[in-house]
Length: 95
Image 1 (tube, helix red, strand yellow):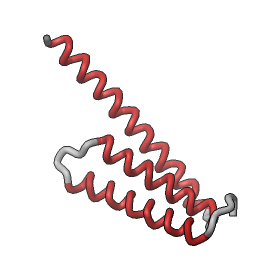
Image 2 (image 1 turned 90 degrees about the horizontal axis):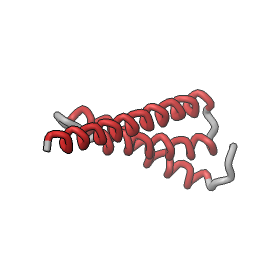
Image 3 (image 1 turned 135 degrees about the vertical axis):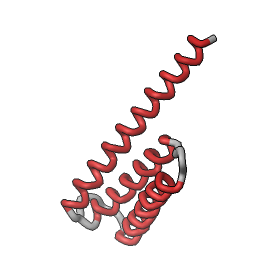
Image 4 (image 1 turned 135 degrees about the horizontal axis):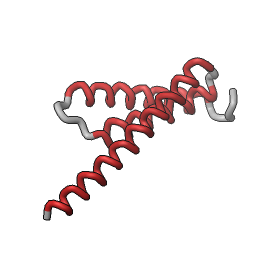
């Protein structure tokens, strides 16, 4: 246990995190044009909540996986912000 948290609360965080990751995957698969802020934001929330659970119920391999999952979600969010800014600049220049 790396943090002091009620194990039941850690399990609840883990299950909510798992639901977030599954939702994001289903959202991405089911939508023709998924909103990257929803997709990556929910993935990031899921990774964070699963990390809380893993800090109580230590599983090093899964903890590293969640670190990569969160990093990829942050990368996706940063990419979406850059694309949104570029699109806004393109619309301004077209006026």
